[in-house]
Amino acid sequence: MSSPSEVLIGNPEMVNRLPYTYAVLKETLRLYPPANGMREGLPGVFIRDKHGPSFPAEGFHIWVVHTAVQRNPSSLTRPHDFIPDRWLVDPGHPLYPPAGGWRPFEHGPRNFIGQNISLMAVKATLALVVRQFDFHDAYAEYDAIHPLKKNEINTLFNERAFMIQKGVVHPAQGFPCKVTLCDAK
Image (cartoon, rainbow, N blue to C red; front, side):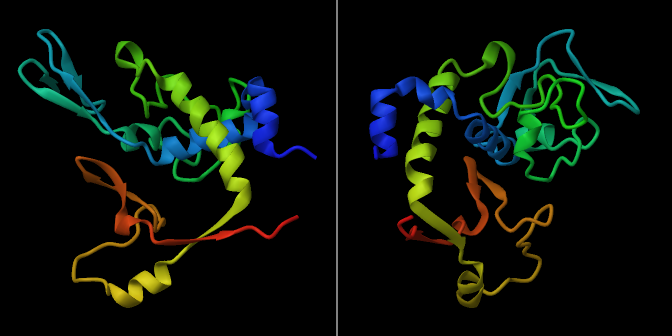
């Protein structure tokens, strides 16, 4: 029997036949985008609050917080839930993501040109690596060593692994985990 790496080396197009792996990847990037976006405000461009005033953007830099866009409850069903199937349903389905609502590589003219090759590389890596390891969080051990300080949070949206800003995003507490080899099957 061929190993997954031998199969992909012999048939590299198979990386494009991993719809659920791709859906998991897209949903993970929706919930945990690696960065945010920045736009320069232009003359005649305004930021409008749907319930109130508008503000001129000229002379300002607009920070697009991808986590907020991609978890917007007014445009997504169950925005804080991990639901890879939202990337497998047809348009019109309640789970189907809104246009422009997925932007881990930005959107429109500022879309990252290497997005497709990056996603292909991650799909191939997932197909080869994840099946060989088990991942378990180690928050109990982390909490024993690092007790919670006053006014410090350790969950966001009922999730322990949430992203924080440090130039680019990083998982809070560094995502303590234990990785073990899977049992041979």
